[in-house]
Length: 341
Ligand code: NAI
Image (tube, rainbow, N blue to C red; front, side, top):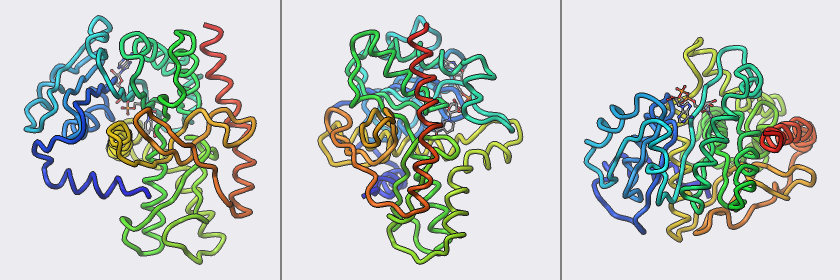
């Protein structure tokens, strides 16, 4: 089901020449000069479904855009710097990817980004989504900026205030959790990672990240302690990178790869092809949890179907019960942030 990785990688390996696919699609990356933004912008330039690529940032984006624009693929690439350029960056966009904001430092949780940096990411996402609501109200939004558990509700509330909210089009990017679960599981089993499929549900922070190894393909007969270790490593994957980078940010390269896979799935959906990925969206899959990550089918209008979590092991049921209070609190915090503004 999650075959996008191997397809995109194969296409990237071929150089992606100029093979037009589907309609002309304009994509913007907001925060394009950052650690995630730069490699993500390059990967989007290599996606044959993209015909126009807007690279926006508050600083240092002109050079990034000039550099990437020389890659001989079809996406016409332009850099837009500073708030005055944002409208032009966004007009006509089909898909807007938002990795703008500050990353974690060692010892910080994703939620600390809300507190310690005076809600800086919350404010950045709110401002950028407001501009999306004004200048490209029909676009699909891929929210990467953390804490995703709160920034997606912030995006939804912001668009509601503008009267242009469409729940099918606001998606929190949790693909890196799936990418990590697949990598760690394949490594443990000693199987080809391309054959591995694992849904990851819940949210995108600590225990709210719940990989469902009981539903993994290929199946396994791993011991409970192995499943516990794989689950914890998936949940702490981001922290593993934050610690290894020792103050120089969080995951950027693997995140750019994951975001490019997810954006590609959104574009395939827009172009009428079948695409199913896990994503954090407004959802009624779990009662009392208004935003939840699960498998979603993507189509021409964004999210077409939200799949239920399916049958769970006892370990996963306990994990689901445990994550709900934290996830609900993060959602409420995001909603409050916009409503009290
Ligand atoms: P970074 O600091 O390297 O880059 C952020 C970029 O955003 C900078 O170029 C900065 O100039 C730009 N920026 C700041 N305010 C802006 C605004 N108002 N408009 C446009 N651009 C603005 O950070 P990095 O490592 O690229 O991370 C970005 C975000 O992604 C962080 O919030 C991080 O926590 C999050 N993240 C999310 C993951 C996920 O799985 N969803 C995984 C890893 C990081």
